[in-house]
Amino acid sequence: MKTAVDRSKIDPADAPAGKAITLIEAVTQALAWEMRHDDSVVVLGEDVGVNGGVFRATAGLQQQFGPMRVLDTPLDETTIAGLTVGMAAMGMKPVAEAQFDGFIYPMLDHIICHAARFRYRTRGRLTCPMVLRVPWGGGIRAPEHHSEANEAMFTNVPGLRVVLPSSPARAYGLLLAAIREPDPVIYFEPKRIYRQYKELVPDDGEALPLDVCYVLRDGSDVTLVTWGAQVKETLEAAERLAEEGISAEVIDVATLKPLDFATIAESVAKTGRCVIVHEAPRTAGFGAEIAARLAEHSMYDLVAPVERVTGYDTHMPLFRLEMKYMPSVDKVVAAAKRTVANS
Image (cartoon, rainbow, N blue to C red; front, top):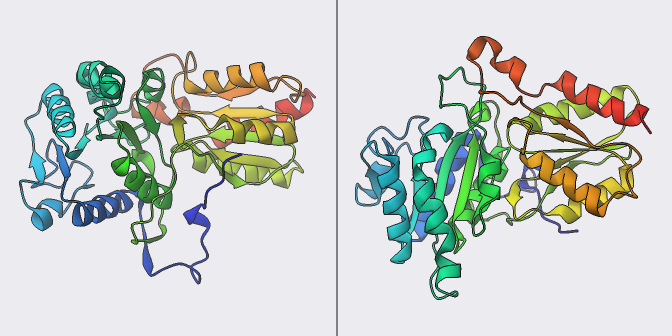
């Protein structure tokens, strides 16, 4: 089992100097740190410069580092992706923004056919040290194409890392690690919790390890596995289950590809039960991959079928039904109770 320090659990009395910030502020803070300490890091995307991005994730960066390092691009995702791959191939460390998850599809050719293949194609002579930041998921009453949860698509592509933080501290530490990674990283940011809460995040440049799951709560009766914005509901579900005498362990996957399956398997060996929670559509969502691996490697540890609490096999509805679509605390609690009842 891999281990990592979860900075969101640092006692403020023991932490380096820092302040309580939101997830979106943690992204800005991480970008600024890397740009101050590495001249090869550049930021590019639609409206990221003068306006500071549609969510203000890059606010103030162009004023601090200039228009040559914080580039406003045309409204052309294909060009953004091509520029990013080209910059990375020439030794720069570009951090591009897709602006919304639903705008990423025109970028796929450059990401899949070029960025993901540089190391393989050149037998390791060249790498592609780029990050594509993607505001991800629903819950903000946005129109069509602005509320996708398409992370599973990228976990199927060899050569890509897929990261999805769930808190300000993990957003800061994992973005630093992603920028320093020599291979391409798709960095999804759960926009529903961009400004939902704050936590202490020391601006000390300390990266968190990639490829590691985070055990956010210990438990003995059922393992709850999730990532991104759904971590909040899952932790709330664990609290409610505890009130009913059910001890739930909560795991934040954080890096979906490559998956730290060992941490999940170790937890399931202890609890015997697993509920996987994600916002994306059910069919071929990344939860199905985790469930399949549990069936392959942890069958004799399971005392009940694996449950999935997911979105539906339909497009994200408009805002009146949006919250009905996504996993809720009630749905997670009900699934966990079914696994306990079935054993």
